[in-house]
Amino acid sequence: MTIRVVIVDDHAVVRSGLRHVLEAEDDIEVVAEAGDMRGAVFEARAHKPDVVLMDVVMPGASGIEATPAVLKEAEEAKVLVLSMQDDPRYVREAFAAGASGYVLKEAADAEVVDAVREVANGGRYVHPALGARLVAAEAEELAQAEQDPLSDREREVLRLLALGHTNQEIAKMLYLSVRTVETHRAHIMQKLRLTTRAELVRYALEHGLLESSE
Image (cartoon, rainbow, N blue to C red; front, side, top):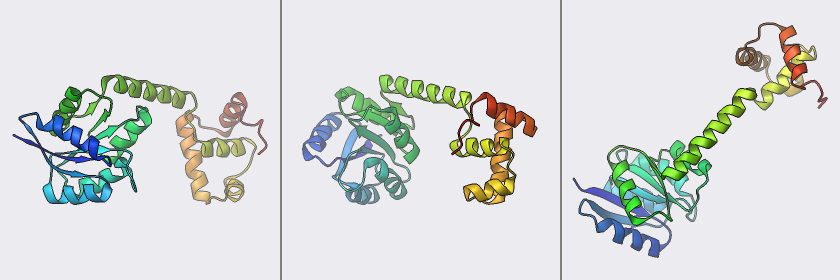
């Protein structure tokens, strides 16, 4: 089976280089090219490709922003993001937008080919070193969440509860509905595994939440 690819990059020389690499393979065919989101959506609709090789930085809209629009036109397609950015945050954003892979522009030709094949076959692809950094970043975030599981808003509600304010008073002070304050309170109790106001006060004291008067 031939893997049909659309290349999306705002630099013609990059598109030409990618086309040369991909079409050297017997099982890959480049069916179209585009230089921006509008062109990507048009070509996806016209060709229904198996893989869209999508640059991140483009005029108008980024490749990450373009991904959902492209997938709407070609539901069976897989988006493989091509980027100079090796920050794990970009990888997360790409996958959240619907991408199936993330490969760096500095990658060797063979890696790009492997990545195209991997996502075309239903898999996911991230450069091994970048994938390791992504896992490490997620582990760090998880550890931080375990140390302090509350959001900023929940900490503020907890502080006011520990100071003795009622749900109604807190709602007025924070410009929230009483129901929202009640929901925050329930989430706080659940996350911290507490059952009484006394336990809330103790937690707030132990974590220095009553020191702020803002």
